[in-house]
Image (cartoon, rainbow, N blue to C red):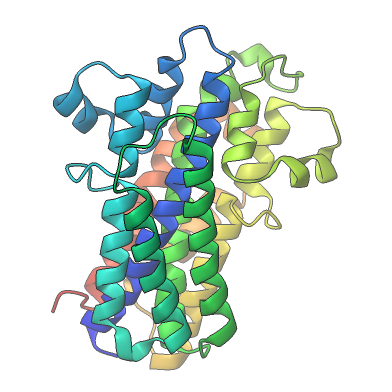
Length: 312
């Protein structure tokens, strides 16, 4: 496959995943903001999670709910706004049109048109839940078309790499920014959490029900950390995402008959970070663990672009 085509597939699905992740974070942020006396503080947290607080501040200055919503949904100066990334996903889909089934292309194009219309005017707090649900539904629609119609070949593998590198990055950032809720102090390890903000972590990854199936009603910081880092059954955990990366790099190695540096880096990420217990991670420091994980995930992504000559 041409590197340009591989890169188009990879970034198409990174952008689609990013649009959904942003909607998830905003939905959780809005819910938590309603419980806080200083509601704008939660929007600062959301901006930190998406790594756009500095660029937001350069444009708007003080963080307010209305400006944060505008910035994250449709501001063209924000390269990670939903409108920007869904347009980038559609542009990449056009680039690789011949590699996609008709159903996938039509789903992406329809998503772009639908969201362009929905975000053409300012979204108020009252309309926000409906718009965020629409964003998530459009992402699910594309994912369903892709899963149901695409051949499981190298095209599929590059798309999956984009999805799971983006998902691993997002879940790790969420954990890092919210670690003060997970582990406000050393004494919190193993204790019950008496703080409604824990829900922003589980809600952001649609994991409330799955968490309760696994741990019951006993909400503990250690359990949340273990669930979102090491549980290989949870489809947005770090372990699940990295496991899928290793699988798809393996399929590409079989397809092309060679293993590349990006494959080795993904394997090392899997063995170095996710073959340890949660207590070892917490003892060494959750923030330090996440920062190192984010660095290595970024290296895997960068090496993939080099190995497969995305821009050659």
